[in-house]
Length: 170
Image 1 (cartoon, rainbow, N blue to C red):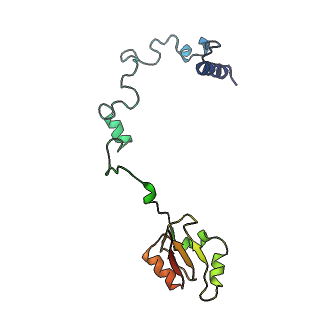
Image 2 (image 1 turned 90 degrees about the vertical axis):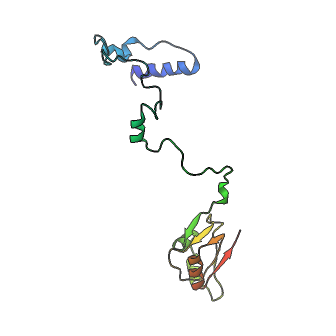
Image 3 (image 1 turned 180 degrees about the vertical axis):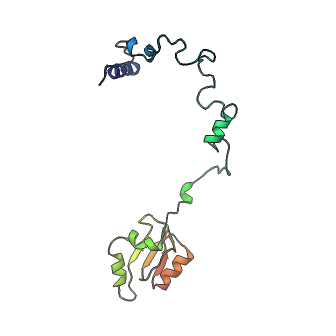
């Protein structure tokens, strides 16, 4: 590591622990390179003043409006209605489609359903697998008993048509 890196770390330690070992040598300051260049790269006329446009996001709706509108559209304002006591778990309904049913159920369930005797079918409890609602995208051709909180109409039709059943659980 370079000397400047080491000195930088020691100065940081001084900031955190309130102990100053020594000041950074002048030779390592960036301004050493600019000696003899009167305005140090900041121009004679406009001068380098402290915070001419304000600090941070100041002026986002005033003198920096074009920047905010161009690069951060929608930064200001509100959208929609407020809901005062929002209980997200009331609308929490993770869904799964029929075509992923046996992926969720685990290994061996499809084979068990295929080779099951009539009147017997494996039970797939979706709630225990983390899904509350079964949707109807995909095909099913083996009888299974599915437990879930909600079923779409199409999912229920397809499961019953395949010889299975839908059980509502809570």
